[in-house]
Image (cartoon, rainbow, N blue to C red):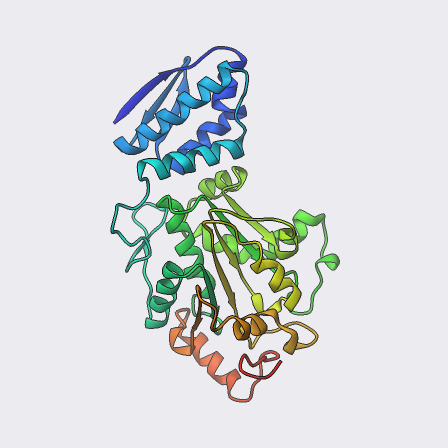
Length: 329
């Protein structure tokens, strides 16, 4: 389906399209339509439902511009979420977005759980608002959580992804790394970006980050916030303190889901027994709405050698300071 809309002139036109057509980029990524602005017209192409939604959004942007009350990008995101909800955007009724195959943004790419543990993990994410996943390296704890979040974003079941990590890694401090804060944290958060780049093009990732639809941040930057209608993933949670974990868990707003992932054999805190992951798993195991999923060596899906390495290091407890979820606090 194709729809053409006339644009107002002058400053009002910029208020509709956004500076550097930022509004159009947000609409394009969120509603999955082709949208171009040329010669005073906007052309929208795509599936009928998405085209109707985009047309409605453009009309509201035009109305706000003419009334000299331009809409900012956060208001635009909220408007898109509202329109999607009202018109039933996203997955058709009865379809499980987190079914046997996750549809992500790369054309033709689908991500499937490869082990029974991963299938249980996705089921837990679908049916619970908070999931705590513990397991060794290579079991897909982070990758499957990000894939589920991306599938939900694409289907219109959430409007924001927040990916966070605590700023503790193998005994190294961010302050000793070269560069400014952005340069310090970018390499540290790279594993989360790697997962996203396996599910979206580079340009899609950049546009969604610029539009504040995807946010990748150190855990400390989440203090004082409330996150509504979001999927929030905490990676490497074994390196949080108890207070940091409480701070993270209480960021959950209305319509949000949280996934907490970690490996209790790789705790880099001075005192492993202080791990917020171990503490949260123990405290919340009987709380309604919370699911705990333990992945094991049988769920390792990296190179086959990774499983043998994990087994070899596990024989004598080597490879990191282990915390026991079932031990007393």
